[in-house]
Image (cartoon, rainbow, N blue to C red; front, side, top):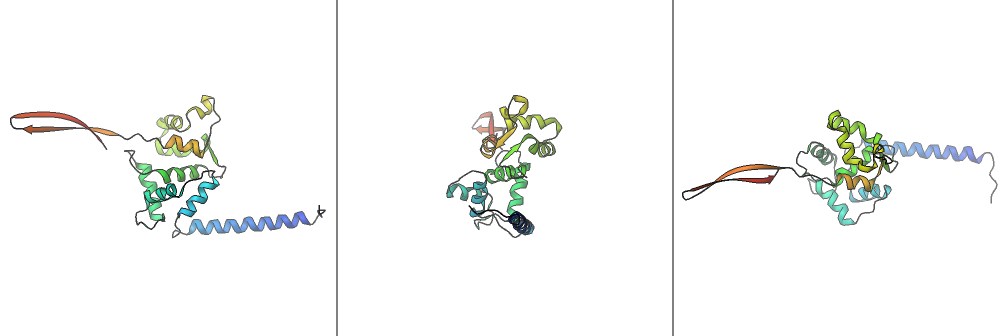
Amino acid sequence: PIPHSKYQAPNELKLLQEEISDLKLTEKKIRDDVHKKISIRDLDAALKSLGRVCTKKELEYMIWEVDENLDQCVDWEEFQLMFERNTTDQTGLEPFELFNIVQFMTYDEDFKGHITEDDTMSTLFARHGRENLELQMNKLFGDQLKSAGGEGILTLEQYLRAVSVRQVKSKDIEYTVTTGSMIKQTKLSETV
């Protein structure tokens, strides 16, 4: 073992601070570049950092769901469109695989690899209002809610299990069928 001098720690600290500064600058450049696209490789790296390993087909599918121009990447406009469609979806039919990953990462703003009740509350309140907050928290956390005796924490896998269940809404349609002299009125449920 090499003995540590009192000068090594400050030098290591300085190097570490420079590295952190460089990483912050790189992050800012990426965040500020609206021409940056999310590729399969980017998505794979992000998911691996959260402990989720996906097949190439799964990654391609997540990108394909929102890839309007079919360049096998998600650009800023496609990203915004995906987000808007999912946050306003009243039918449960919008493609949501990538959105769910993005939503988890949005909640997990400190990059802890999990989300807490506190991480999600303000977004759910803004999106669903005070009167629906408790219902939405129950849907998301279920028995993991602190009030239900849970820890109030969800991993990515737990979160995806909770949000990947979509209730497709249907509506009843009345129509009249005329055959010869018979008239028949019928109700039909149709997926909206």
